[in-house]
Image (cartoon, rainbow, N blue to C red; front, side):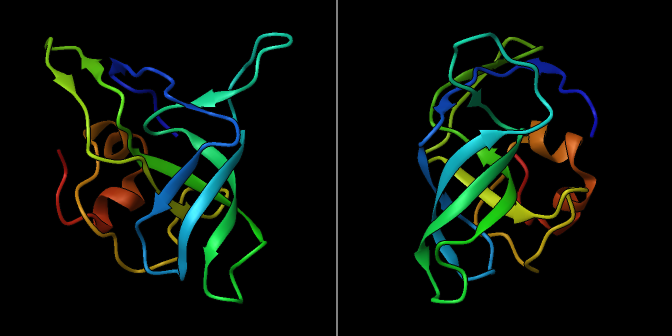
Length: 132
């Protein structure tokens, strides 16, 4: 996991629901915890683009529902600022299901992904069709 070259706003708090944009069978997932990120006492963890998170599947195939997976956030609605001064935001909040090392469980990603997530997770960048 590499560092991100921008200051991504943590837009997704614990219990946030988002779309799963790979072909694993999950449709809607709920954020449970943010992994590999230091926190502050008595503050609920929140995540942004490129963060590794723990999710539970709320809507999807019967085999996937009510199971816990790790995932990486690839899009967020809230605008965040890049180093060159541009502000980036997407239409939805989305993630892809991965393993602990950041390798995809599925074989396809629907829609664009952010450049920050692609730089941090090379296996996601290799599968993505469009990087914004």
